[in-house]
Image (cartoon, rainbow, N blue to C red; front, side, top):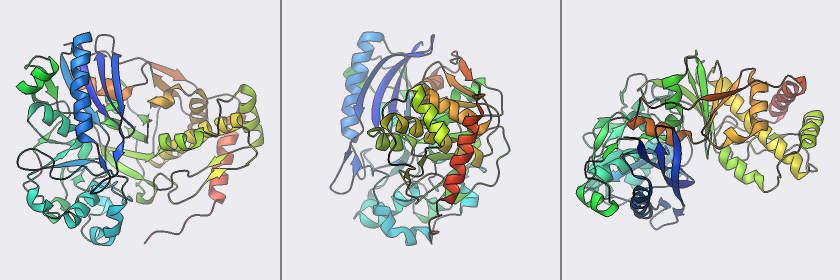
Length: 458
């Protein structure tokens, strides 16, 4: 069982990757944008488009490379409501739709406290409970149509096998539905009328089943091909290090979201107003975490930047030129703040340096909020950004490591099928010795502190 196909549904892109678990690297990848359909009845994901893409991709990559098993990883803040026939009881809501905000007061009246769930109150549909509440209150007949509620990775493994489930890492992703320290559902499940409708609980590594005959015929894969239940994408990035790295350490999983997770350290009390949360890792353990939309902020700013030269980096360090939070003020440790460039005269190269430093300093802030200790392992696209690494090391005073593969979600998901496979080696980068890096990080923090705090939400 050497080649594992990984269904990887991110917020920005959907992909199918084949991971060679002997060399632990991707050997084939096909992608499509995860474009949101505007409605009616509301903005929703293109589930049927993804399904057709995945079936075609499985057929193509199996014919080219051979596939021995399938695993799944997908973004959080999402859930699927199924009817009695296994179809969608309603289109799958885009968690960035602001519809749930219109019923915020009614939802807050039934929502469990942060102290119990470790799930901060977030805008739009970022709390799954808020999504479900809004859908139940606004979509006629939905309450009667729901036969089963499944977490998002388990929707895909269920569609391949016919066996649907709910899984711990996705339930632990600020859903309000789960009690991470107790390992059971919160009272919100009953308050929403979902008792008896939550799909059976599964662990990420469980085998959901084998391919349905019609799926095997459509893709050319054997009917006996095992399909593993699946995992929340940030926890897929964490899994290789849970297996191979001695605690304490932390992982910064980068993509549309930058999610920092601390393992083996003593977490301070989490602050619900700063987008900290209690995740659940692949072993079912509560894991203090913090996040911001770093990939989204990078996309918002990169049009004004070019890759920085050594002179650009030197100038930004020497003159204290900053990008201040936040470009995406709906989430992160500095919510509801509107930031920007400290000097509008920055050149594109200088902005490129300041943007990398900003992303590193936001990550360092998140790590500090969860009491991270030991080395920081960077997964995903930012693993290739050296100025980001250098500033993160300077700001935290701890080594920064990267994996040989920058595709931590696919590698982690493949490990669900091959837990004995070799974990990619880490490359360690020490913090810069030039004191200007640390001085810059401190000056950025002071500049953020001078930026007026937004009015507290009710």
